[in-house]
Length: 248
Image (cartoon, rainbow, N blue to C red):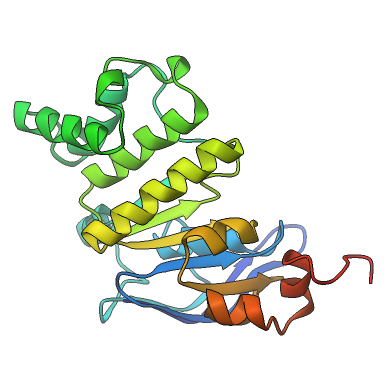
């Protein structure tokens, strides 16, 4: 379980930007949890605080009962091994084959890739339906296939948590549906917790069990997807659902 406790993140510069403002959330183990908001709501900052690519200005990130907010060095690297991330831009290494990309977590962790690692990686590619493209380079793959390779690479981390930061926003509708079905299947079969950062209510409806709505760095609404969709309380939620005009 992940608990965010009064999380704040302020960026200093010419003027202070309060990207997160007193965010408190509980994400149950095994959930598919959506965090939704328009551009600039703080979604990406929030997910980067979850894996500590950004350090919160204040508040705590508590994972399975352990406060991870101030982890450093080996303890931080060990924590990140259990938190995989899937990006909007896929994040694949262009000069590496699909198989080599999936093997990268092994290389990063131990400095080498064993025959056993390669066999396991091939198994993950098979799981995402791309065993026959193991020798292909990213430039030879479609957007949906690239994201499937990214998912296979995430699985190679043996994660407890998968963070999806706008993971389908660069895909066409058919590829989006395919990737979401795959993530849903992975969650059902493995119990891995999946956190979906998105601006699309359709993505939330298709895959998530619970959702939180973020506006200007604040959580303005949260609950089960069924509850929030049936009875949205905040005007931005209603706008995202198409139940209220942005011009009103």
